[in-house]
Amino acid sequence: MIQTQSLSVYYGDKQAVRDVTFHAPAGKITAIVGPSGCGKSTFLSSLNRMTDLIPSARIEGQVIVNCCDVQDRNRSPAELRRCVGMIFQKPNPFAMSIRNNIQLAVREHGQRDRQQLNQITESVLRDVGLWDEVKDRLDDSALKLSGGQQQRLCIARALALKPSILLMDEPCSALDPIASATVEALILSLKERYTILIVTHNLAQARRISDEVAMFWMNDGAGEIIEQGPTETVFSKPNHPIAAAYFAGTSG
Image (cartoon, rainbow, N blue to C red; front, side, top):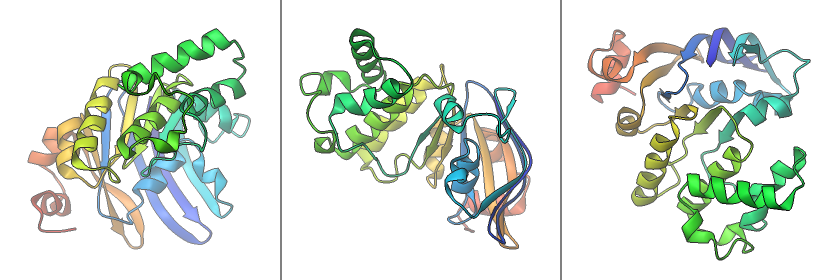
């Protein structure tokens, strides 16, 4: 579903990610781990061309999503992002009703039928376990929800466009432990239908929920992958000495 070949990302003259060759298997959760500032979020953003929004950003190498070249300039970024949803570190609901948070993007993509819109709204809110909590206040502002509810709403908003892939950039870092556990359970429940990549600093979380792990490390000023493979193998028998030290808590 997702693979990169010799991917490098630059901001102006500064290289942020260097020569990353990576594969995320379909229908699995792949955790991207490593210390702060080693290119994890930049790498994630390159997968659905969010880097296009940064004027100084430049990408070299290849990104393949669902057998298509992401860097093909004939491909609409909007269509790409419909297939590859993005969940950010801090919940970012729109300053509008819960209902409109779900329906706005769906309407932008051409759906105008009110009954269909309402069905989509209920379906995705059920998918994230939020329907029973908000069904009687769909026209209230989404900003009145708790942090954990807001993050689940943002996930539901992404699901409304029927993506095949979800990119999650530290989706639990701004949440308390109870809300984090709820979002973790949600992520696990979604993996049968979506390919999920999650950036996390929480190694225990990565080990709990992921099937595969890729570890980034800063080398000569740019992030590189130094270890990747099945989660239990990477955590219990890492090949790279830096990865072994990092997972043991003696480095990073």
